[in-house]
Amino acid sequence: MQKRYGVRAAYFYVDVTTARLNKITELFDSGKLVTHVGTVLPLEDARIAHEMLAGRPHRRGKIRARYRFSTLGTVEIQRRKG
Figure 1 (cartoon, helix red, strand yellow):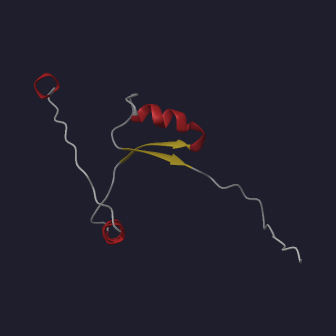
Figure 2 (figure 1 turned 90 degrees about the vertical axis):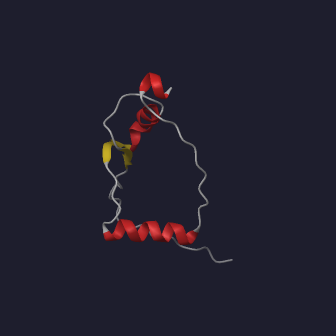
């Protein structure tokens, strides 16, 4: 594959821990770690996002879904006694 397409494949295993996730968060918050978002789609287009992950052409970078909360006002929840 490398000779034909000029690419290299690699596999790695990640041991996810709270400490490591906190460190990544710290790096993002400080601006030392940044990501490049290439495509932002509304949540309704989640199918297209999955197609892009599977190989459908898209801009280079992360694929992100956008969700907008609608303004519904205040919702009150009452407990029943008993």
